[in-house]
Length: 120
Image 1 (cartoon, rainbow, N blue to C red):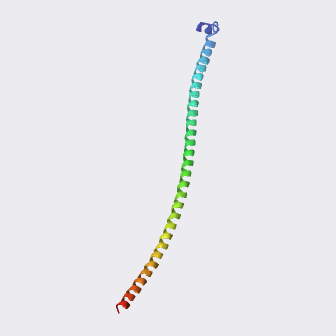
Image 2 (image 1 turned 60 degrees about the vertical axis):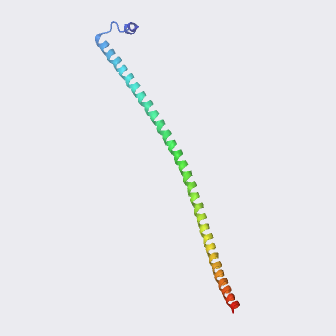
Image 3 (image 1 turned 180 degrees about the horizontal axis):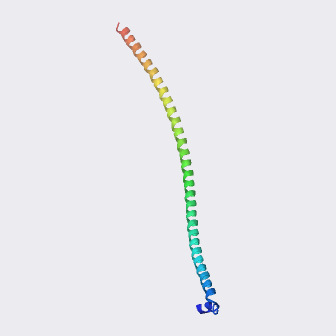
């Protein structure tokens, strides 16, 4: 089949044949270069898509971490309020204990005084 492709060149001068050969070589070279560039382009597009997916995943992870952080901050606030309430309750109870201790001591003194009076 290549003989049919070459048939149109019959009878051409050697100079023209040389120029045709140079042009064909240049076409082949350009075809190879185009294929290489197409492969590079496809590789770069694939890498770009991979990077876009990576960025999207990072954004999603950042959003998840942000929500988790917000949740933890709310939990910390809640725990701090509970701690403050517990400390307040403790102070109230200690105050009540001190009052009751004072009442107990007063009652003990009253009992001792009454026992002394009874002994007399």
